[in-house]
Structures are given as structure tokens and as C-alpha cells.
Image (cartoon, rainbow, N blue to C red):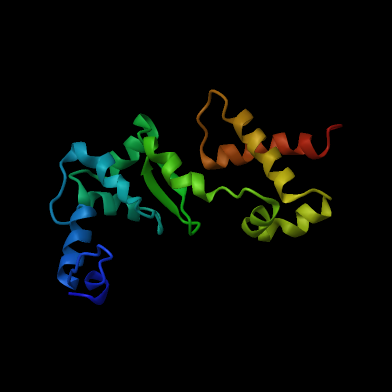
Length: 171
């Protein structure tokens, strides 16, 4: 028994084997889910770096192919790829999007500047705050995606056209 458990903290004494077994089971690595368990497997938010590694991680957890994962993302849209806390893409169930993203959005100027550090020279040169620039980008993104599905490249092009108008209304 650990000293913490003896002190009445409520901690349950466990050994390394129990911890590893628990984590493997919770990550669906001890018993593979059937194809219907794809969204359950996605609760682990597997990272997709390098590209293609998330479908492989999901295949290890559920009886699905990489093509089925891609189809679920592209057509069914019950899974999606988002940026993780560490800035790498990961796959999550669409219904769990707020769980994986709400805490990531900066909420003040200092946190926006920390996220946008590579863009700060341009933002500062424009005489704008990072918060102001991101509000413009978010609004332009909502506008660009209104009723359409775009690839990352198409979205970049659409934002480029909209942002030119934002920075130079006479264009």
C-alpha cells in the first residue's frame, strides 16, 4: 500500500501491470472493436502525423480500413481532422469536437500572439492586434464555408480573396 493510500486520500494502490492493462483496455488495444466501433475508437484522438498514421491507429482499434476512415471523414462527416493541443492533426468524432477544441482557442491578445508568433511581424506591420486579425480570419472562414465543403487548399484560396478585401477595401 502506498503512503498516500495509508493517509486516507482515497487513492487506490495499483501496480505498473494494472496501470498498463487499464490504459491498453481504455485505448481499445486489448480487444478490437467491430466496424461499428470506429467513432468509439476515435475517442482516443489519434494523431495523423505523419499523414496516414491516424487511420492506421484506428485500424488497430477497430475492424476498419484506411479507406473507410477516409470515407467517414469525407462523406459521412462523423469523424473529422482537427489540430491538437500540440499543433498536430488528429482525428476525432464530430460530436466530440468541442471536447477537443474549446480549450485550445486563445482568449486574449497574449495567447493569440503566442499561437501566431510566426505571423507577428506582418500583424504588427499592419498595425493590427492578433485578436483583431483572428476575428477577421474567423469571420472570413465562416463566410467561405457557408453552405459549401472546401479542401484545405480551396479554403486557403477563398480566404486569400476575402482577406484582400479586408486589408484593402478599395480592391
